[in-house]
Image (cartoon, rainbow, N blue to C red; front, side, top):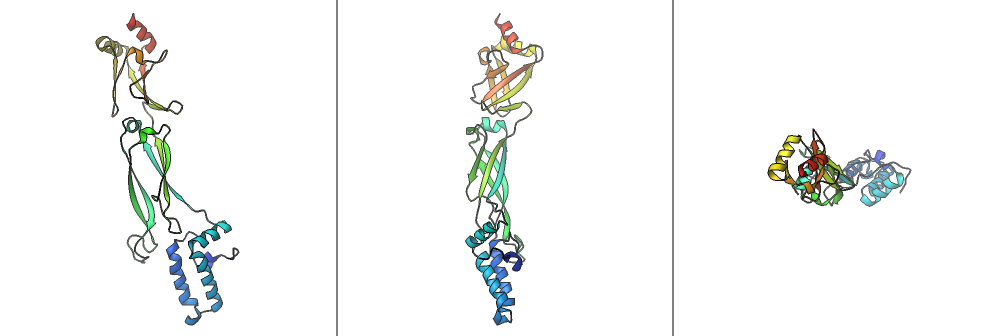
Length: 250
């Protein structure tokens, strides 16, 4: 193996050429340079030497690594953005991404799927159902779900779940809890506490929660709920929650 010789350039190939195309190119060059076809024996020997190296995925990988001329993409990154509502209600998360796979046409020049490149794109759909179990989001590997590399090997997909918060939602990485902010005026809160004995808060797609006086953390306008990962911040326009609760107790 001559590391100082550029077999890619000599054979008219790109360094990221898909593996099956190397054999096709070798056959094309053999028709031109084979001595039986009137070609030059020395040139044909060099062509054959290049094919012996590049045509073998293991030898090619070693050749590329030793020359340091190509960084192999080993994984396909897939990002999933998840809303708090999906996590708190254990809702399934559907995701779709595109990957490159080997075309089964046998590298036909006018193939409508790969146009002779040997690689076609395919849409992949996945459903994840346990997002509520992961407090900080999650990054994991799905085997053989990514694109093929230049050697024709199926790679893995790296799936990263990302919490999408904003508006009334906040996420605390230390407590692993979501906080939902709701705004009331003093009259609304007093009316609910007097009539019902609790403050009723409805959160779209998540549920309805009853906040009693004992729900509120001491000295805070944040209330604990029956959900282990959900807190509710009650924002009052005219006063703070501590003063209001003391007034209602009196």
